[in-house]
Length: 231
Length: 244
Image (cartoon, rainbow over all chains, first blue to last red):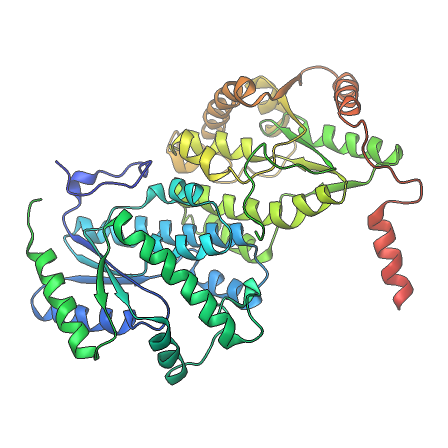
């Protein structure tokens, strides 16, 4: 029996039996500390002798650069943007993630189909349609959902980069200024993520503590996934 | 996408959408051009949706093709992205404005090509569920040998993906092209019933085919907006000039 499966319709020419590694997803809203923890996990796993591939949105060789530019221009419509992201993910899945899993790597991905679906749903896309489109994605071994409340999120964003156009959902015209828009947009995203916890089996992690506290919990849970064999 | 996402067959616009499909060398573009001339002379507001869209998406497609970076899946997805951009910017707005929109190739091209490349027929149909259902979709039915003669005579060299070279059917590009197009025809034939494509026998004379096309189109045009002044695109360019 293959360990892996697809959500829906399979990618052509992929033999699931060959995939040996682990696919671990970190999800959560903007500013919750996903990339910090991916960096720490990678180091820790490598110290323990595991080969690690870390990947994330807009990093594909095919579409990554252009997708970033498209976001700067704010010219693409909602469906177009969703599909552009899907292209980016498919390219990384076929050319990075699957080859790494075949070679027995642990793949850490900063966001996966869940963020893409949440953002698109908030922008009016049909959830059923999104599920069909992302049917080509591999089901991960674990999805860790880093979660903080909206007040904490606002504080963190102010302390780091400040409010940014997309993270504030400015394209949705939801508030008079970036702060108001940010709060409404991120609350909405949180609600979408919370709905996914049961549907997709997210493991929620309270990310309001110190980096060390959060990392310790995350590390123990990742350790359990890595140690799990042959299931 | 504000206001929710409408699915295939669910859009309600005052305009009309006519599209042409068929393999390379079927003569569909010639027929569409003749249709456009006629509609304009009849005073309809015609909007021609070209198969190019946002330069950003186009760049990825071009670069990916040049560097042979595509898998069947990413080939399918980038074309869907491109098509979504066209739909959101060049098909829905003119249809809302009551124009007659003409498109050379539509979602059925993707269904045929992607399925031949091994993508799931159901998945690719779901992928394009956001597309506006055409008022009439013409399929120019051409036997392979007829199309091949038209193509292989005076024309630029066939390109890698166009010939389906990525499928590894043959090392010879012309032979690969023939095998690939043969499979595309099989997919089109399946879609005639599935999507109610209106098949036109493309081995007949250009005039005969055009007469059929115009007859079918005119039946579907009842109640469509006409302009007695000028085409709106001309008006737009006039307006621009007068601002200078």
